Length: 231
Image (cartoon, rainbow, N blue to C red):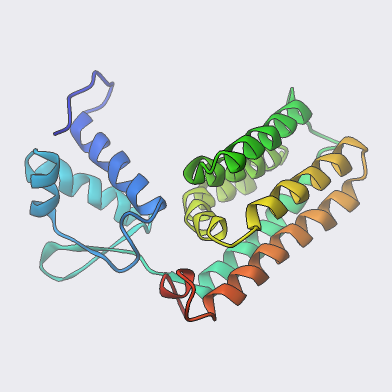
């Protein structure tokens, strides 16, 4: 049962249901295509239907859920075409952010990148899966912060939660996070040395490696990922 928290919001219960369901979607406790019924979720949370429906409508608006018949919802599917489009968009947007570093660099930028790499190392070494893919996402958010283009910043922010879903899949790939640590370090070092074109190339290589490994895994019928990604 959820407990009321003091928040400056019209419906704190709805916010709590929204946060709880979103986390379950992001870490695949709720899998793509899974049916969610408002009354069933209200019973689980021990609250009325209204805040649950409000939370689900918010998640639908973010494309985390889709509406099903009878006032029900389903967790949105992850398609291979969406993953490809997402990676293509990230290459352009994050690449632009790196190129802009020589003109705009947030305070403590390099230290934040370094600390993110160290945090990822710790999480991977301690088998903290959820924390690992969140920290992976954080590294790229730090890079995105260097874009002085407000529209690009908004685009990257809006892609953020969907990126987390894809990163959760990448974490499942054997050895992928070890490669990610090395690749993040190479990107960081190139940026630190002022070799921005090289950093963009390393970013593209990093994203392409992840994409290729996801593609290989989704085609393997024995892989967990093959059941989570649709064509």
